[in-house]
Length: 383
Ligand SMILES: [Mn+2]
Image (cartoon, rainbow, N blue to C red; front, side, top):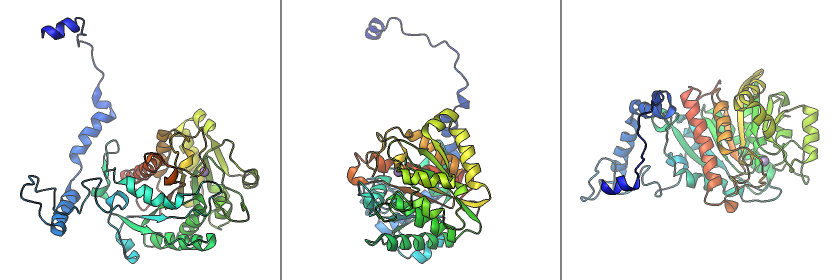
């Protein structure tokens, strides 16, 4: 006491009135956790011990720990699926799940840095850092939906054949009534992914595209590269260009042929400056209105390079001046509120990544979308 008085003689008196903290998200989130069930978690612990044996005698926590690891913990350990979701080897059983994670490890559509063929691996690996519970959303995915990891679509070294494979794989998942989440891969996969979704939707499909680049040219170096997905997707009869919204476009890397074609289609583009000026809420209002106008479903395509290059070093074409991570996350959550028929996260290139931060953000975007879909009862979208 003597020591403290001598060194802090004027410590403040705590006499000021505090605001009503019960209105804060943090306060409410603490309360919400109390009402989230733990049924599935307990089931997983039980299953872990059935499959992985009872723990050694010296282990005190007999409830959560098995001998061989078969569940979420420890996070650094185990076979690395997305969020440690069950790996479903028999793809005919995908309809048993609400959401299917699938990799499209394809990067021969890249025009500069390659490496996105390792995107699914990188994203899955760092997803082990996450739990299925979101504090602010007050959602535990494990308790609400069934997620599986289907592994990867087989992408051979040919653009057209790989695109055909991706279309078939995505359509297989959606036709089973399961929401496909595609881990890219370079952005050329946006075309075959949109094509697979469009095959399963009666009516038009709107596309909301987060990117620094327009990606609307017909060909690049004589092929359908990652600069080209929306030229081809908007030629799909039920994916009209009037329902394509492109958020975050800008900078010094938009090829003029793509801009020229985009002008002829009059796609809806909002730059980072536009979005900063009108705000996230207004941006969402415009994006949802355009994408959903006369459409029966919306496909969300997130190019991780829409975020400022400083946050996403592990990508094919980093561009300074993009979104802050929290802006991108607010956008994808706002889009997910109204439901989606599919989501892809593309252009994560682990060989260029630093401390997994690019992959980490890709996982977060997916988790925020899934949590929002669950919170607003949109798993299954408006299908
Ligand atoms: Mn891009």
